[in-house]
Structure formats: C-alpha cells, structure tokens
Length: 360
Image (tube, rainbow, N blue to C red; front, side, top):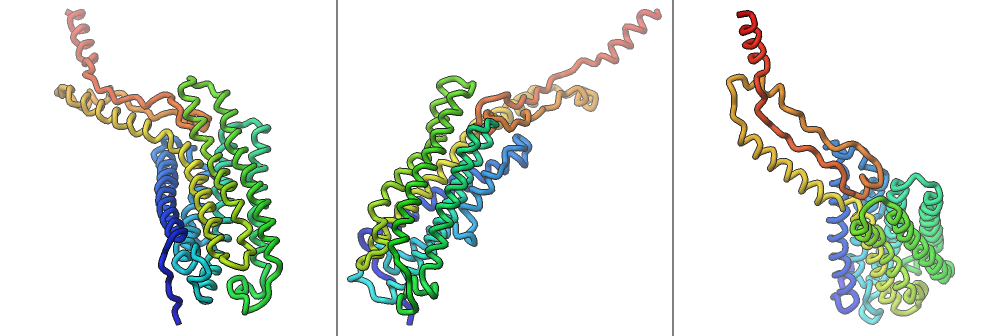
C-alpha cells in the first residue's frame, strides 16, 4: 500500500519554501561560477583560472551520486511531504518511517556537500597566497571538516543493525542515539571554527594586497561571507537534542535540516561570488572592445591594394596569463587592446618614385 503524503502546514511549508528558494539560487550562482571559470580557460583569457576549487564546487553542487547539495534539497522536499516538519499526531507509522529514511539519506548528503564546499573555499584561498603560514590553517580546515563529517557518518551508518532499523525500529535494534547528539555538537563547533578561519584569512591577505582602499573593502566583504554560514551552525544547536527525542522527532529535526540547508547555501554562495567578481568587468571590456573595433572598421577607406593594407594591420593580443591574486580576485589589470585599423601609406611606391627622379 502506497504511503500517503501529508498536507504541508507551518514548519513543513517553511522548510519546503526555503529549500526551493535557496536551492535554485545556489544552483544559479555556483553554475555561473563553474561556467565562467571554464569559459576563461577555454577562451584563453585566463588559462590557469580553472582550479581544483572549481572542480570541488561543481561536484559538491551537481553530483547527485555523491549525495551533494542538490540531492540534499531533494531529500528535504520529499521528506516534508511525508512528515518532516509535522508533529507525530498527524502522522501514521508508514509516513514516519519513510520520513526518517529520507532524513537519514539527507545526513549523508549533508556530510558530502559540506566536505566539498569547505574544501573548495580552502583550496581557493590556498591559491591566493604562496606563504606557508596561511596554508597550514587552511589545510587544517580541510582535514577537520573531513573528520567532522566522516566520523559522525560512520556512527550513523553503524548505529542500527540492520541499517533499516534506523527508520523502522521493528526491523532490528539500535544503539544509544545520544551519541549522535553529542557528535552533532562537536561538529557544530568544528564548523564554526573552520568558517571563521576561512573568513579571517582573506581579510589578512586583502589588507596586504597592493590595491586602492576603495577596492579592498568589497573584496574583504565578498571573501568573508562564509562567516554567515557559522551563524547557521549556531542557529541549529538548540534543536540537536531532537536526534534522540521520543516524541515529535521529525518536527524537531526539520529545524536542524532547515539550518543545514541555509548553512550549505551560504557556504556555496560565499565560495562562488569571489571567482565571479571579475565577470562584469571582463564582459563590459569585451563589449567595449567589440564596439570600438566595429567603429574603427566603419572609417576605413578601402584602397586598391587591400591585401597590402591588411598586412600592416596590428594584431590584437589577449591579456597576459596570470595566476596571481589579482587574476583570481578579478582585480583590474591590463585590458585587451582594441583592434585599431588604420590606413598605411604605400612606402614601396614612394621609394620607387624617389629613385626614378634621382636617376633622371
């Protein structure tokens, strides 16, 4: 017999609405980041622009096989239609079992995308500087995030025998659920520490960057947006006790899931905005160059020897290839020269005339 869906009310409606909105915004922003960075490399405007941080961001967002952010959003939305965010009084046993199963898969998905997005941000910051004193804390961020996600994941998977007893206790036996709550508190602390590390290091790097002050502040703000993700980690702490609650467990866990979705979306957006910062400037410059080139061509008076004239036309050169801080952050550098087409005098014919007069 098929399990009936529940009518969304209150917290369940909020959960579905936020998940849809944040999911779509994140897909657009991270998808634009991945496309733009790949476009920079393909067009050779910035051949070294694409890096491991882009691979990690792309896999973290779009690879549903690895239970990443898109998969987590799907589990959340479907789970809400089967009881996630609803009190026990409105649910039957089959709905509760299916919703708890979806929450279990959400936890695995959340661990996967957290590792990938945090590693993406850390790798991007590592590429900004060659100083080892900044590399060490960033590698700590990666290692601590992996440990903080893998250890609880292993515990969750091995807590019940068989695994299906996680969502249907009648199928087997489970250990003490309080260990999940304790590990969740530890993971939240690790998340806050790593988020603040990824927010403070860019501020230090930008302060020492040789750019005008009016350009430093937007860079600092953009690269430090990850600090808001730590606020989401703090916001979910009061609800972690619902992991081992006996009543209204799904209602309480909906708050945890909601804050995890908010945290993941903020982390993805914070990690994708800095690489996208240079996009408007590059596209405006390309549009300006195209318009200037068309205007220059319109003023050319074609001569009797077009082939001879075209040989003297200067060839446009692309921007210099750089993997520096200015390149990754999109700081203004040398723009691509416009194609300046001009009439060139026929020096060969003039020389022949002068030699003929001399002979006479």
